Amino acid sequence: MEELRYSREYVACLHLPLKDAITLAEEKAVTVEWTRCRVKLLANNQPTCFRCQGKGHLAAECRSEAKPRRCHICKKDDHLAKDCALKKQTQQQQQPQSSTSGCEAPAEESTCNLNHCRVAQDLVAQFMVEERVDVALISDPYKADPNSSAWHASAGQRKAAIYVANTGVTVANVISDPEFVSARLNGVQVYSCYASPNKPIEDFQDLLRRLEDSIRTVQHDAPVLVTGNLNARSAAWGDWVDNRRGEELELLIESLGLVIANSGSTPTFNRGAGSIVDVTLSCDSLAARIADWRVLESVFNNSDHHYIRFSLTLGCDHHRVTPASNVAPRAWNTAGGVANDAFLTGLILAEWLKGDSPRDWQNAERGASALRSRVSAVCDFAFPARRTPNPRKPPVHW
Image (cartoon, rainbow, N blue to C red; front, side, top):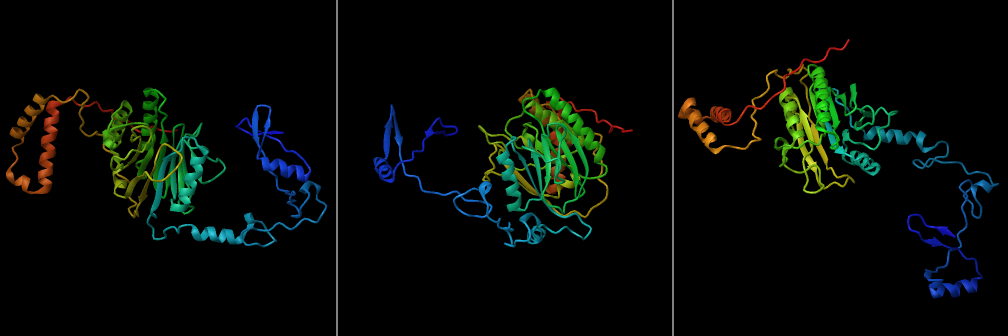
């Protein structure tokens, strides 16, 4: 008698004369004490030997000559599938060819949070094969193989990872932190980050400080791309709720002069009412090369975060990136709400002080500049200035 796993049910095998077995099977069920048990005839299946493929015995009892092992790809007997030349030739044909014109090749990239789930990681690997995605920027992976050149993970518990599926992508300058990992892919310094929602705000601020130090160290030599699930919410990247983490991340974006690549208001986290906690940021020189950024709502991935996919288009400009300005953009603190009287007074003062001519509003660029100037003047009058961190110099390593 054998107990079935997970179900507290039992299976019993009875050996009876054929006539009695047929009679019992026709009843379809028998009563054992207080339990009604189903009955069926078992087929007379003989065991198969995996050594000689014969019937009636197992490989451990086999005395026959073993059949040669064959490759299941080309059906030949002189090698196994792992050494098959046809398999290697097919893989080389499927790999996208790298650019040889001196320009950086376009790359298809995807970001995702796997919730430390093995099935989710298997699905993202399959998705990359089917959709020809070159690089996956992963938060909370199930496992990052330290012996594989395709995987690059954060230090410690490996909470963030970069998986490079296309061997045509060049990898250099790998940086590992407990909560982010960075690598220079085809000349772009790419960051994959993960900030747990369960840690206090002080730990999140410490992560942002380390991330800022790292970006300031590399941004003079290469364009920067930052992705990941930071569990920060803000209207700046399309969410309808602001939280403290979002405010801290906004300050980092302003300090480094980064550009938000998120587009639209589709939730990236689909549990409950949904939220946008996965962000994509880039330096100003790289922003124009990010194309077709989108949230893939319809793709099943066994995670409560949707895939995000975008392309990095061709880039032939190899000059150094202009460093971010040391002066943070103007910003105002709106946490206290809007005082209508103060705002209306600011509008009147702005109109009186600016004194724009009607010609300015006939030209689109001059009109936009005049409007921006007026709105800034109103906000200066109606709202207190938002505190901004003092830009720090990059650390010096000896």
